[in-house]
Length: 558
Image (cartoon, rainbow, N blue to C red; front, side, top):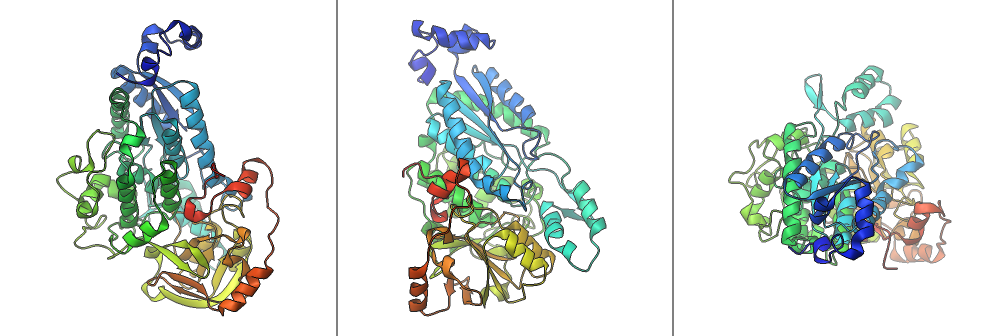
């Protein structure tokens, strides 16, 4: 056995008396402290839908740790619900929380001298936050998702949270009376705990954690309220003790092969565009090369297999019933890096199931895909020299080429007001700038504007172009993550009202259709704006956040 506390006699030598005293004061004894010491990272709280149930799951994990001869130490980290601050300036915190969580996990794991970690999480930036914290700890760790929520039905079909958002930010401003519909959705669209059951950022990242090899096979899509999730908790607890004893740390599991598999899964699922930010950031923590070029190359090769909302009308619960992540990986088998290691201690090739999709109406086969190529396109051109990101599966075929006049706004709030007041017309390109990693600061999601366009029936007729980001809920025509952002002098900063913008999704270009000399002259005249926030964690964002093509995290190497 080579785990840290035993190898260095941290709790068994004479020099460890004060440490033992502290833990004995918490109720542990000598036998407890001689075992592998396992941190259970629990973001559970009463204010977040995805995390309200995690206390019970944490208890199951701890039971498994005890069963395997380890000693669990549960500790908390913060977890917000990204749906709460939509429409407010406080949405700025929803990406930078990743940095805060990662740091909290790293600090607790090392200050408390733990030997391994079980990471729990369900939603958005919290998932990559705990994973990056686990990487920084240098310890063996395993991730267990909180799972998706179940779904409600209305008028004979499944309804999810994105539908309510579209009513709130769009349809209620139209001529139709939507009050009754809004009330029904408000009361029923969230029937219980878990991540919103569509292919938003939460479920995309839960799935990608399993694809990365960081979770037990088949665990990601198990619904939050299923007893199976509790059984997985005990299995996860038992497995982390074995991993500690085996010395199976993250650097022995996570390689470029794992990350490439995660990129391929993102494309096959038409997953949230936020996955690009998170996978690039995870790669950076590991000093593994992963760039937008990898996403662009693979997006031309990997087919879209998922019909989960917003690509289709199925839910993540349907995906689970179709075989979940193992079925997805089986369908992609011929395209995957099968030597990628997993927390089971075995490579991916040895943990794949015999069968692929059990329901082709939810998860198509690779021989008959939903779309022949990737769900995410990397766009470049004179407006995005370092790249921009587009979820292609929500764009109609006749909108893959689009030219329109720019309507320029300095925030999601301004753009939303223009849309609902009727100031934006079919054929326009809504440009939202100063919403990037440094400009927002914090890179807000442009949900108000995109949901308003969809809710008002304009989602297919107006493009949104921004240096901010989008929710995994986003439908319609949208290009985000424009890099460099306006705040640092990227070309998006010098677009003027009425400028012609040309978009070609198939050619992967987004351009300001003006002579290059005109653009160069405008850039030469550009002057920086004052940061919107100068203090606190957002102040650090304004000063040090990386550009979107590099993941958008605070730059700890500057």
